[in-house]
Image 1: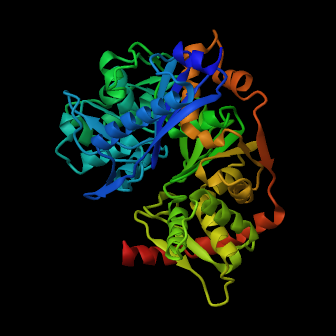
Image 2: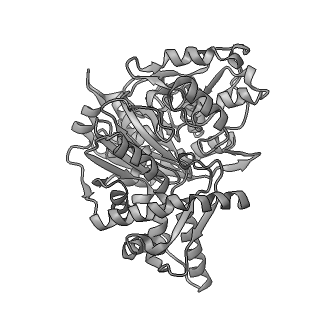
Image 3: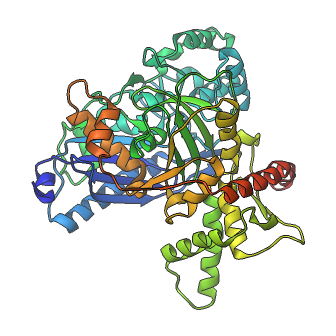
Amino acid sequence: MNNTQLITEGKASLGIEFGSTRIKAVLIDGAGTPLASGGFGWENRFEDGVWTYSLDDIHTGLQTCYRDLCDNVRAQYGVEITKLSAIGISAMMHGYMAFDEKDTLLVPFRTWRNTITGEAAEKLTKEFNYNIPQRWSISHLYQAVLNKEEHVPSVKFFTTLAGYVHFLLTGERVLGVGDASGMFPIDTTKGTYDETMLAKFNALPEIQALPWNLEELLPKVLMAGDAAGTLTEAGARFLDPSGNLQPGILLCPPEGDAGTGMVATNSVKVRTGNISAGTSVFAMVVLEKELSKVYPEIDLVTTPDNALVGMVHCNNCTSEINAWVNLFKEFYEAMGMKPDMNQLFTTLYSKALDGDTDCGGLLSYNYLSGEPVTGFQDGALLFARNANASFTLGNFMRMHLYSALGALKVGLDILFDEEQVQVDEMLGHGGYFKTEGVGQSIAAAAINAPVSVMKTAGEGGAWGCAILAAFAAEKEANETLPEYLGNKIFAGMESSKLLPDAKSVEGFRAFMATYKKGLSIEQEAVSVLA
């Protein structure tokens, strides 16, 4: 069956992911091969002390992204999309979207980037003896309770961004276990929310005074491969106002970008891991056993099929690099030239490999927002050097690429050094790894382990989400997600592996020694500038 026939007969699967700066749609065939894609650029806003996207942003972004996909399918294949094998929705994990009994959003969407829930996260971590990060949905809900926010008694349902968009399309209040594990701790033996912690939360005096119990508000937890509802007539018209798309299409459980990143890198088996590096950065390792104690720097979440994962999540990664690249773009334009942005990024990233392995004494912090892993509620962007530093373009770019992984390195050292977690290979994906060999070699130096990048790394989480959709539609009886990925998607997949370079490993360690000492400088910058 050729691609045109496959699309016409509704045999293709669709994944749509809401990233921090881009909404992306990817259409795939049964082997996971991308057929077409579409996209929509967007940015969060800082309004009334909260990082947010409006409902209009979400709705317009979804429809525009899907329309762009349809336009590209029409241009490539000369056909319209009317049917699909399955659809999957994913989005940046965590955050807070709370609704009343009429499904009205009660407060603006509070994204993962917010660091306004410190009191709640600290109290719940102590109460549960389990790390509850600030960005988790339960931290946002409990902080709203502690703040005595007016909307709290009216909450009837709360969810993540992926859960909300899935609800728009299907009317189902469900969530994939990976995304659900960023709302509230999961009991991996049962595949649902931890009952002991639910009871402890409901017993808190502040919660006892409210007209609800927590389990009434949470979405139902589903596993990868489960049916999570079908596209309703209203959902079809919302996604595709042109009227071409037919209702009744299967949807897989909505997932977070962490889960789709694991799928996109085939990192769902024990002792595998991945680094997703873009606007934010997180690293995940599928664990062989529980950690020995609670670490505020390490989140415990799950794969989309409910295996325990140690996760280090940092709020900031490539935004500061992008800002500097744009400065170079302005210089180009001031000189009367029109830069090719892909070439500009590639050239500047590649220049980092010419830099000294310790960045020549240059230091920077990319804290556009707060960074809880290193203890920052707010952020400031900082570049520092002394008179003896080697201020070259290579060192400057290498410094920024190191700094993008600085906070992540702090958390990973706990996993690998203190907990002796074993990982056979880490797989990289996201914009940080787009320039061949650059981000990959630096990540290998940071974690002192092999890092591989697959040919499909540029497709990202939307591709991983499309695979989850295909798995729900096509899996065989008793077929597991690792089996499906290994046998049908990644068998023979082209990838490149880089081993850590000993000099770069030592150079990164030297940079990190200065980075940790310099956190006091960053703290002063925050106090003066934030």
